[in-house]
Length: 538
Image (cartoon, rainbow, N blue to C red; front, side):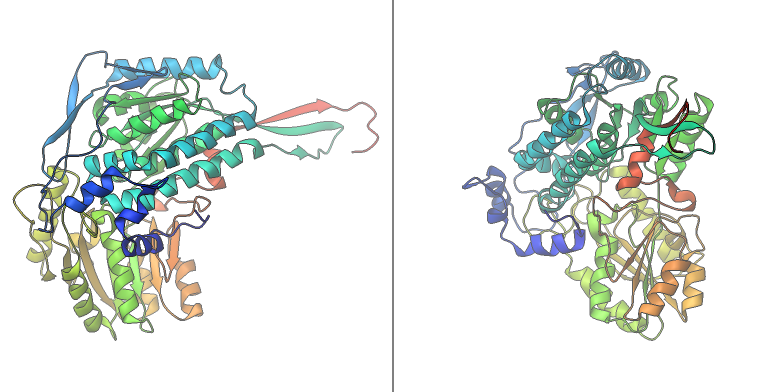
C-alpha cells in the first residue's frame, strides 16, 4: 500500500472492483468470496448467516497463554445483523487485570523484550504485519461479524491500513534516539529515550482492529509491555490478532489482552499502581473517569482520544455535486460511528437548497443491508443500546423543529439497521447539532459568511476534526487556522496516513495517536550529565 491512506479513495476503488478478484489469495478465490456472492439483495436481510470462520479465541490472553477469567464468568458478544449470540467470552475483572499487569511487569523488568536490540523488535513487528496480510480474510470476517461494518470496508480498507501502520512503527523501532546537548560548563550532556514500562490501553468498539494497531504499534516499537482491554461489544478480532503477534515472535507477557467491562476491568486498569502509562479511546464522559482514576492512583500519564462533533463546511464556490458526495461520506462512513464524523454540515446560503435536495437524493440511494453482501454501503449499528440512542436523537430532531428530509426509521424487524437520515433547517441549539449522535444522521445548517461559520463551528466543547470544501486557497487558509480542531481536511475527508498525527483540542482529548508524535506517549526522557576533565573542545 502507498504511504498515504485516504479512506474515501480506497472505498471508491474497492466498490468498483469485483469482490472475487479483490479477495484472491495466491491464485484461489477465497471462501468468503463465495459466501458473499450467495447473500440476497433484500435490504437488511440475512439470507445466509453461516460464517466461514470458527471463533477459536474467547479466553483472556495473559503471559502468552489463553486462560479463563479468575471468576470463571463469561459474557455474550452479539451479531449486530440479527442480535444473536456469536460466542461467550471470558469476563475479566480486577483480579484478571492484576494477573495481566503482573505478567507485563515481569516481562518488562526481567524479560527479553526491552533488552532486545531495536532491530530485533522491528523484525517481530514486520513479521506481524506479514501475518496480518496473510490472515486478512479471517480478521475481516471476525470484524464484520462482531461489529457490523461492511466486509468490503474491513477487508479492503482497514486491514491494509493496519498492516501498513504496523510496518510504519516497525521502521521507527531502531530510529528512536536521544541527543547530545551542549552545556554551559565542562560537562558532557546526553538525553536517552527509554520505554515508559507497562502501558495500559483501552480500545473502543467502532474500529476494534484499527484502534488495536494504533495503540500497540508505537508502544511495542518503543520497547514497552502492554495490558490491553477490548471493548465488551467487540472482543473477537483483537484476540485473534494478538495470537498472530505471538506467532511473529513476541515474548510471553509483553502483550496481554483482557476482555471485560469498563466499570470493572477498565477501572481496575486505569487505577492500577503498577501501570506506568494509560491510553484510552472512547467517549468524553468515560475519558473523564479514566483521567480521574489515573490521577488518583499513581498519577500515570494519560493519552485520550475522545468524542467529536466535527463541522463540514461547504463554501459558496463549491462544486455542489462533489461536496454532497464528500459530505455524505464524511458522515455516513462506518454507519456514522466515527469520532471524527462530519456531523455538522454547514452549507452557504447561496447553494443551501440545491445541496439539501442532492444530499437527500444521495441518502436515498445509499444501500443498507447485510454487511457481508458485496456492494452494501451501510450495515447495522453496533447494538441495541446504540440503536435506540440514535432513534431518540432522530425523534429529538423532529420535535425541535428540524425538517426530516428522509430516513428516520429502523429497517426491518431484526438486527440494528437504521435508514440513512437527513435533517435540514437545523439550528445550533438543537441536540442533533450539539451532541455526538454516533449514527447515520446528517444535520445540515445554513450560514452566510466565513466569519460567522468559523464562530459557529468553534462553538462546541469538541475539537477533533473538520472539513472545508472550497476552491479558494485564501478561504481554505483562513478557515484552517481559525478552527480549533486537531485535523482539518481541505476538499477531502478521513485521510488517515500512518504518519499523520490524530487527536483533538478541548474535550476531544489530549495527546496524539499515529505519526512520530505518538512515540513520545510511550517514552521517558532521561538526561545524563558527566564531568569533562580538560576537554579539547566544548
